[in-house]
Image (cartoon, rainbow, N blue to C red; front, side):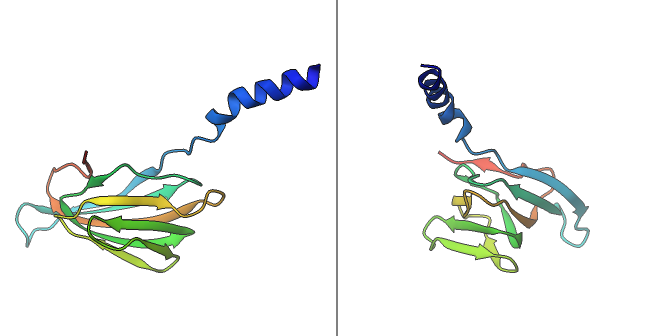
Length: 129
């Protein structure tokens, strides 16, 4: 009887345990681009826990991505979905909508650097419906 109760409890709580954690975004550097009025460079490190993914969004910036660890899946609207591994790169333009951004693994973390050239003071991420 105790085993049945334990199994029922595990079944009840398991869906909550399977929810992927959100990505951790850390600002590394921000610098005004003095020879490009109104623009700044912003460097971020993104840590994707296993199974983590982003909502559909855009950056309104030039975005340069470099994978440090693990593998990630990226796609902009109208583009091909790509899986990137350590040392590979990806680009997003200011008009692109980022429709897929996720850790390719459900068991291993991934980490990448993002360098954005954007309007000074503008939000880093703009959600898209």
